[in-house]
Length: 232
Image 1 (tube, rainbow, N blue to C red):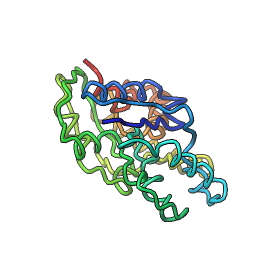
Image 2 (image 1 turned 120 degrees about the horizontal axis):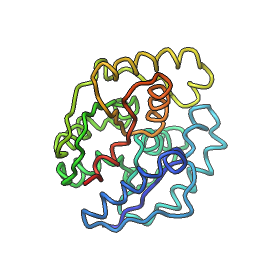
Image 3 (image 1 turned 90 degrees about the horizontal axis):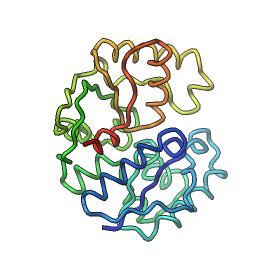
Image 4 (image 1 turned 180 degrees about the vertical axis):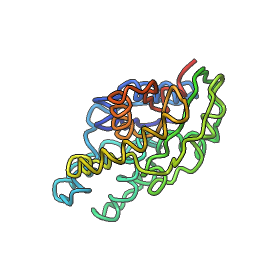
């Protein structure tokens, strides 16, 4: 299958290893992975802030860039949610490509039927289900099913897992005090598990959580799920 890889702004800038890991996982399964140089932002921040006119050309560019692929895979449930849900609702984009955009874990489990990638990651790991993955893309237990098949990985349950990390895109900038308070609760939950690693599907949330853990002196670190699945 010829797949387009949508890297996203945050992953391209802050989590390039997650982008490379996504490509590696898909290529190991025998797929042709292409990362179009023409891709740019999906317009999520613009849409969330109410700037539809500014988001329109970004959305049009995304559709034109990825139109020739059988499917588009992305290491971010929030960007996938924007394309699948907000493009049709807010921008009126009725294009088949929006229905063929998938977050990595849901693509592997739901589209390819793959749960065991032969990965090995000998660490104690806890999983943070991001708000978008729970309520927008609704990936379900796909990430957990993949993590449970990673050799050497000890998966520990995260208390109050479904609570937000406090990032919320521009929310963390406009409401910094509230965002920091929410983050403190999330970091405390992670610390209580004794995990070495907190993983998630969204680089934006991992950026928030990783910063909180680092500033608090916690031993846990934030790692994108794609990097775990690509590990040997």
